[in-house]
Length: 403
Image 1 (tube, rainbow, N blue to C red):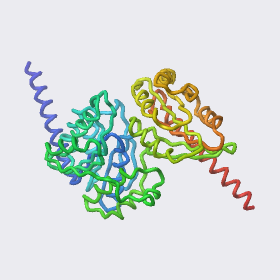
Image 2 (image 1 turned 45 degrees about the vertical axis):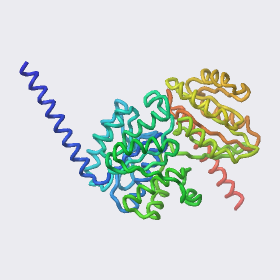
Image 3 (image 1 turned 120 degrees about the vertical axis):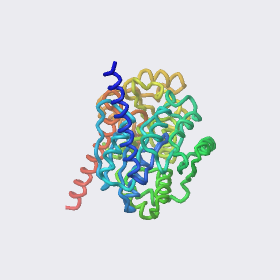
Image 4 (image 1 turned 45 degrees about the horizontal axis):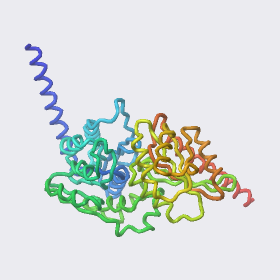
């Protein structure tokens, strides 16, 4: 009995010491920025960190994103290896490592989905001086509740008490503001009113005006001039799941592939599809939904999201194409529009695109980038490789003509 009591006391003392050590690490970093939201968290985290670095702040950052990364003060990145899957305790170890670099600022992407874990992450692990909630859209409804209002309530758990928080949320801003008032948090709504197309064009990937404006506002809060922060952001490395376009020509046909797998909630996916295709005329528009066997509900949501959109074909790839096809037919999508492919070699998908293309096609990949064999990532890698091959052939052709 005495041994049990002593062991319990030792355990309690160890927990107390660990808590004190972590709080000391947190307090050692004066600027702590916690980025939450449905979409854009990884991109905004990277943009803010790049802007702060450009402004002379020693900054470390941590993203969850498609592939979790720890970003060093010089912009270099280190992979985060998870042997037992994602766990919010990871944030404690991030701070332990970060404090050794003596940073002025740390920018942390929220890795929790469960509302309780979001609260714990903010109140115990990060204790942010500046909060960010990118937007509030229906996603992870199995954990955050069945409505967008419940999602908003969940995300509000990372509002910094008596602090300041920036957001681009529009539709549910009122509810977010109500929760901010409860926590005595100053909530500032940012609108992309002064971001120009020219500024966006200087990014080497497709960045959203909302993400850029939000990051610029946070950098301004820290005292970084807009022009300096913007230049740093334009020269930064994007998240591996960032929206990118890969174009190539094969047999006289042009294929444009958009990697939208990171935006796997229905609202964001539909918005991006509309953004990249609404202006296109007389070309084939192909929407590709990549499915996971354990997330059939998400594939259903994505089918619902694309119903009102204008497209020529719906490609179904991944683990459960037959189930998704059955649902799509049930929702009224014509069978002649559906191409159920499953998970063949990505070259098969590419050949199918060319087969259905007269002169030009635009393929938008949505859904899950992962799956049983990270199939979405394989598709992206193949289209990227095709673009690189096309560029090499064009260069060789130009040299021959020049000779």
